[in-house]
Amino acid sequence: MKRIIFGIILILLILGILVGYEWYGAFKKSQLIEQGIFQKEPFPINPGTPWYLIPFYTLLSYLQKAWFCLGMAFLIAGAVQTFIPKELIIKYFGKRNPKAYFIAAFGGPLLSVCSCSIIPLFAAIKKRGAGLGPAITFLLATPAINPTALILTFSLIGWQFVVGRIILALSAAITTGVILEAIWTTEEEKAGMLSQFKVEYQEKPLNLKEDLKEWLINVWDFVKKIFPLVLLGIFLIGIVKIFLTSEVISKYLGQGFWQIALASILGVVMYTPTLVEIPFIRELLILGMGTGPALAFLLTGPALSLPSMLGVSRVIGWKQVLNYAILMWILGIIGGLIFAWLVPQIKLI
Amino acid sequence: MKIKILGSGCPKCQKLEANAQKAVEELGLKDVKVEHIYDINKIIERGIAFTPAIAFDDEIKAQGRIPEVEEIKEWLRQIKK
Image 1 (cartoon, chains in turn yellow, green):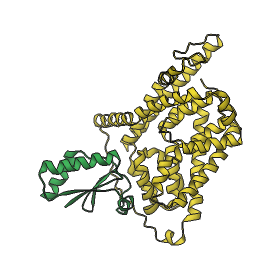
Image 2 (spheres, chains in turn red, yellow):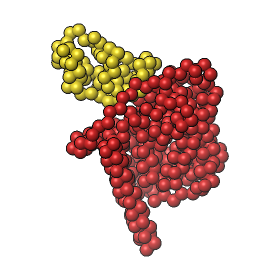
Image 3 (cartoon, chains in turn blue, green):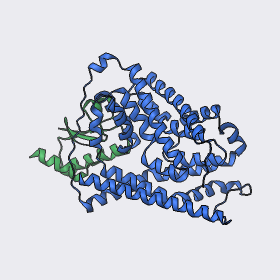
Image 4 (tube, helix red, strand yellow):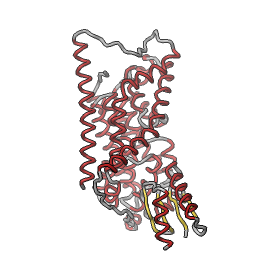
């Protein structure tokens, strides 16, 4: 128990430092602007910037803006991996009752499993644990609200989007799970469920030196795995930016019902690696994307990617996959509409 | 005896398979075979939730992590006793 508490304190501490840093920065900046002092951007992108420099400037200004938050996010991801025992969470996945949906929705993100472990875990929850509904909820909620993504959303876009993502993504995931369970699970299956996970949980004592070492190793693993992809993703965003004008963006992705519908489909079709979706949406918001379409993209994009749906269709039928994808798309549109109504505009710093 | 590696084929599973192979080779065990099971349905039939997992015949030794070569060797030594 000591070890888990230590981990939670560590996570909260890092989170506190990050929030303090961001808010202090924003406060200082707004003070300067009030005094009429505008800080010069070191890598300004304006109509006068030569086109071939745009990808590099995009990458550099992103790094300059996000290095602190990204570092903190990796530290937290490593701490979750090290100190929050997966076995403890998975034990509760075995029970077939309404609570299973909430455990799937909130527990999934805490597991911080790599993307290739999500599908086996999904299959295990479905067949040996809580059944199809909670398994679907787990599958959809886990990538959408993982801690690293939320931290980056807070730092690059704003807290409104963090709250919107958590509430709307979780309710969409739970709703989809409940509906799928009602449509596809027969009484026979319910009766024949073997609710057994072979998971043993041994409590580990707190061993400060060893644990901190393990934590740093896990952090480094995350950095190695994710950081190159993020860099590549941002560079590609920079290339895309050469061709996008704000007229095009505000026309097709500005505020409105069809714009939200289009954005939520874009999220599915475009395969954006983890964490890249956030700077991407930031750039689009700057170019005139509406808040509704932006949130709709963040709801459907991480939850529904073509590779993951293909993998899942080997465990459950493609009809069920199509079913949850369409449901999630509709819920993404509804979520976008709600968010556009609550947060019609956002100021990006 | 067979060492079974259970995992869908991601880099972590490959690393575990390599570790197990190395442990067997370093101990010079000729009668132990390392087998990799990729099929998700077969993996969860065993009650495994976290991949990669490693099992000796039907006994699951670890799941959701990559045991080091030394750890696998230790298990092998205990069984051979």
